Length: 427
Ligand SMILES: *Cc1c(COP(=O)(O)O)cnc(C)c1O
Image (tube, rainbow, N blue to C red; front, side, top):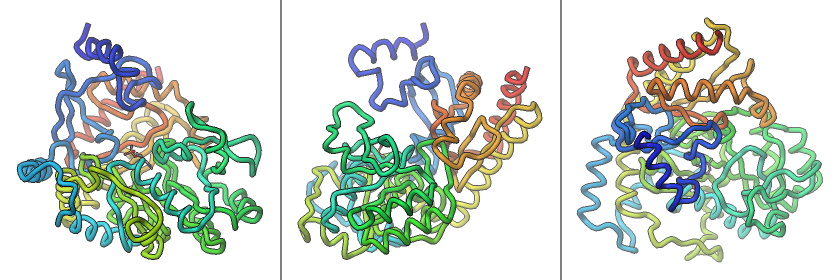
């Protein structure tokens, strides 16, 4: 038995499912997870010593590549000065200034330790600010695992949601309305009926947790208009997309300013950092200035913030995003050409350093489109690529990530492997 399998067996006796976050268990693709021993640049090595070119990047944070020397050195220096103080530090001020300078919507920002904490806090703040309870989310968008956000659509339009997880009381889910992503008509109808009772709309402005979907500009602009008209707080959840699709997030790309923005992943450079921020009049409702409570023993951890600041410095290098985007485009175009050569139904798209692969004949526009793509084909592709040393996300419903450490030769190697895999799938 391989060391990966031995470790998975050991893990399953003491950790539920053998993993500390569900998708890592390979449940969607079958087989056993690879236990990672180390990673550097574009590569990861597993417990059996197999090497992979990595297209997960710790699910987004590793935008500069794994174990970037500047980030590792910043962490080492910070750690030597003390791991945590429970008192403010200069580095927190610096990272807050950096984030406000990058994201057009941020007047003020507060740091937390995960994306989940960021969205949970942003929702509480929006409710406290508006004095309303109801929120809107969209089916297929993921916003972390706070109770009110683990909700799926109820039956029929304008009905309240049902919990999508055990342990969430119906009474909590009933304050969450779940609508179709990228459906402007339904959004308008909902606001016509209930607009003045809605505290917040939370949305992934490009959805990256049901594979990758770019919604229509009309949908995003309508969100902004309706929220403004009804005094509803518009929350862009850019935990994944912020500083990943470009230096200003999706809000910079599409030119829409939300009231609040949630961040995570890239801003921590691989360490646990999340953030939420936005309009000054809303952010001033947070304790200690206002009545909405929010806190964290390790919020603004000096070691995590040091990693975040080092990462933010790297992405500001001239040409960083141009190079990242060129690599990512090279990958999706190469994969599409290879699939076409072998007559495999496949398409792909990318934004900045983020991409989506679909075993379908057109780019998905909705959650239903994503669900209709060929999952068996994806799983076949995934395992064949993994065996060949190319590590894609172990699910057809996740986006992928390229880092600045991926070279043209890395991408060429992945495309060459995919060419052989597609040939096998066609046969
Ligand atoms: C990853 C993610 C979260 C949750 O962040 P965690 O750090 O895993 O809690 C929230 N929203 C979006 C859009 C994400 O991609």
